[in-house]
Length: 242
Image (cartoon, rainbow, N blue to C red; front, side):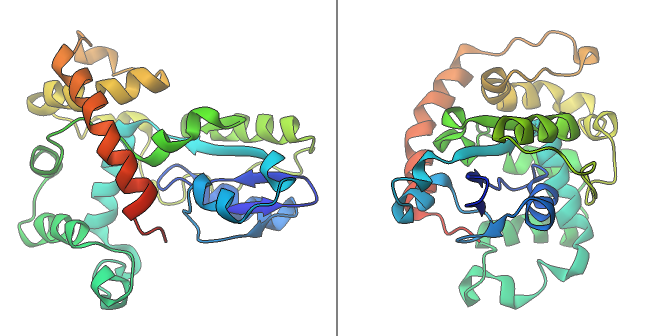
């Protein structure tokens, strides 16, 4: 989370949405400073903010979930910098990586699982993330797919002139959007449509045209709405943010 008292803004860093590059740029060029933990949600800020800080311009990012899950898979498979193999990062040792994340990492690497196998095992229910807590209430949401233009637009809304193009965009992403979509082989495309459709409908994302019919079952929307209650409870009261 990045705050600037000079420019009166607050940037919420949603994981795997380009927020690392933006957060770094805000601190280096636009008088931003780190506050709370990197991925703290907005409600954590409200607990410590004064009446004036609560009026600050709030913005964050969002990303196509088709791309998010591929990024997650690639990150775990490559394990750059030994993030998942370092015991200090495990939640059981005071870190942030949960047993569930470790099970995903071990499944991918110990069984040499490809993306379809990983997806079918760990993505059975409709997808959501903690953007559901408050993203719709923010003053602006940057689309990862248009990160350069949207970052410029966010600065204009704050009243800041952009000093330079956003550097290091997509630094950890070694593939373009179409390559990410290629991870979804024909045998899992229908399942992916069922899993992601409610979230994508909410945020205006579309599936690749070559996938054909983009309709999904009414049950999936019902499932998404039903699980939103316990998910929000978990993300608000139980999840530990790093």
